[in-house]
Amino acid sequence: MSSNNITKTTLESFRDAFPALKNLIFLNSAGMSPLPDPCRLAMNGLIEDIGKRAYLNMDNWIKTIALARKNVSELIGAFPEEVAFIKNTSAGVSLVASGLNFSEGDEVVINDIEFPSNVYPWLYLKNKGVKIVLVKSEKGRIAPEAIKHAVTPRTKVVAISSVQYISGYRAELAKIGEICRANRSLFFVDAIQSLGVIPMDVKSCGIDFLSTGGFKWLCGPTGIGIFYCNKTRLDNLTLNNIGWNTVINSQDYSNILFEPKPDAMRFEEGSPNIIGIYGLNESIKLLKAVGIANIERHVLELTDYLVERLLSMNFIIFSPRKDGEKSGIVTFSTKEKEKLTILEKKLFAENILVVNRGNGIRVSVHGFNNMKDIDRLIEVCQGVSKQVI
Ligand SMILES: Cc1ncc(COP(=O)(O)O)c(C=O)c1O
Image (tube, rainbow, N blue to C red):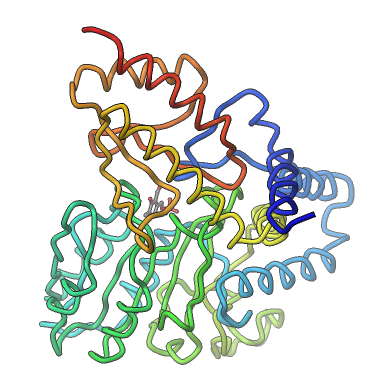
């Protein structure tokens, strides 16, 4: 059996883990992925356990949380002690934006096509006299050269998404990391639109802080996210959310001694979302078993095919599609605007789940999708493109 065949079989059994795919043509992982069975069963199992035995299995929970932290750290190329479980991506952006010690006149470089989570916490710093520098996108891309041009000796942070939520543009993280290092700026990445579908290595990209939620490409539940803090940057962040679990002696309630943990666990101020961690851990294990590089290869094959077919029918592609800049997200539109609404309605009626973003249709393709899903979408597009209105 060739390695391609092995991957094909692996991808097929990956698909089988998602019961929702039996009824839906699901093309919206950039929105919210369906839950795979191992994730759902792990969460259900834990709920059953707590229902029947209260906290008597707590030792197991603690072991599973430690394993989950290790799995997450391997997924992003970090050390387990650099990973904190948080509630969502936004919480991680705020940990950095509100934790760094800004002085009046400091600058933060963002761009004009970020999702609001990676905009508002930075804009709020205007209160402290921080200047927000907005890099202008060009056709859905943020050129590293434009970031290089935007940084100054006052740039404290450069913040960007690994993949843009509308255009699907994949940022050149290693290049941006180099720009940050050369300029002595910190580098923050919102990784929710790539983690699980595109390999990530925080160290080689020079990323200082990374945040993500579990419910998109990681195929986990909502309410659980991941925060990475490079261990050399731990003390750059002032703690704003403090609780019993922030400190080294967190179990010694009667001995008040404020000494924050020497690792990223200091950001987990109180009781963890154990159910969420159980679910996310199983989803990550599943993704890792398929192999993120295998998933990426498959997704790029499917999206290349999709783009080729859409172009042949005269649809307009918004997403940058050169090697190195493409991702699992393809956003497209019709030349005649009325047809966009017709197409959206038709797709929904056919149980094909996509969404409207940036005045176009956003299709997001994961490793569990197959050629049949794409062909079904294309068939509906074909029908609408031929329709006379
Ligand atoms: C780039 C990006 N960041 C963040 C989020 C969501 O943030 P959170 O995990 O805080 O809900 C989304 C989408 O919902 C997104 O597309």
